Length: 94
Image (cartoon, rainbow, N blue to C red; front, top):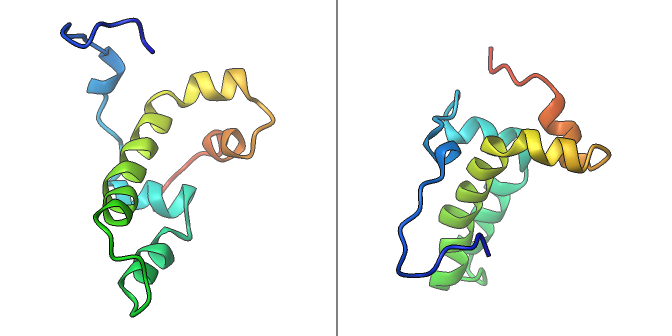
């Protein structure tokens, strides 16, 4: 979708940005129900599939990182979106 061929390498400068706080902080701020979802897949009737585990523990943290890195563009393009409003609030863990 970004215009690169599969065989081509690509460089995305903003992907090199380090997050200011640990991922857990951003998860708590942006997806406060994530710990509940993670607990639910471990319950007796929870979804114990590899897919559920990968989604909650790998894909969602990756998406959060991308949203933080690209947040300025998201806020610019979707200023009224609830996620934009969360990104505009100064996040300070102290």
